[in-house]
Amino acid sequence: MRSLCCSSLRPDLNRLDRRISRQPPSHRRQRLPDRPRLVIATGNTGKLREYRDLLAEAGLDLVAFDTEIDEVGETYAENARLKAEAARERSGLPSLGDDSGLEVDALDGFPGIRSARLGPSQKERTAELLQRLQGVPRPWNARFVCVIALAVPGRDTQLFEGECRGEVVPEWRGEAGFGYDPIFLVPGTGKTFGEMPPEEKRKYSHRARAARRLLEAGALKRL
Ligand code: ITT
Image 1 (tube, rainbow, N blue to C red):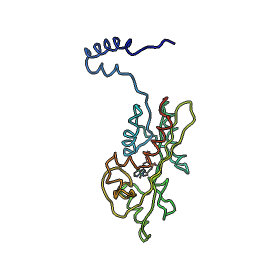
Image 2: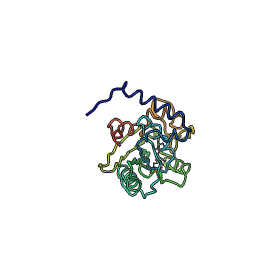
Image 3: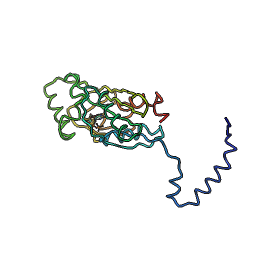
Image 4: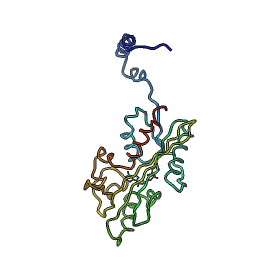
């Protein structure tokens, strides 16, 4: 195989630079090499925002696609797989699905995989959860769980899990994040996820931990 050294490539790159800089901006954009695409199979804009941040280092073009499939699985893994594989079948592209939820110990893990279905709006879902906890002695220990499924054409689907333990609190604190973030207190920080900017939430979150496992496994390197 012929090997190319950097200095022999440089004159060509310089010529290319000059050609590009003479062209109008729209042509310049077209000449950039395409980045591999990864479909994020979600209709949740909060999740999508987090994946744009968590996977930034992978150098991929993230495309959002809501499969709107029925989440008929009995585990996070089954539902994550359903989302990822539906997106892969419909797009023909590598696809990532995420199923996640909040589990409260005193409610035997409720709402868990039903976290998105406790009510018509997130405000009502949060109020419903707090209603169910009325009269239950505190602390209301809980954990967030996230399972990521990566479905790549021609490969077996891979699963990555992350969790974050904490405590549900009765008062709504902060407006950052999404979902149950304002009532989830992270031990040792004195803050709920709702009070944390994204760069702080990613130090602790279930989704960040699952995404780190996905990146560390090298699963996004050969898309
Ligand atoms: P997609 O299925 O389209 O991805 P969804 O919101 O329906 O969106 P899930 O079925 O995985 O997603 O439901 C997860 C629910 O759990 C979500 O709607 C939130 O209420 C809650 N949740 C998950 N991760 C969360 C997080 O990081 N912060 C707060 N709440 C979260």
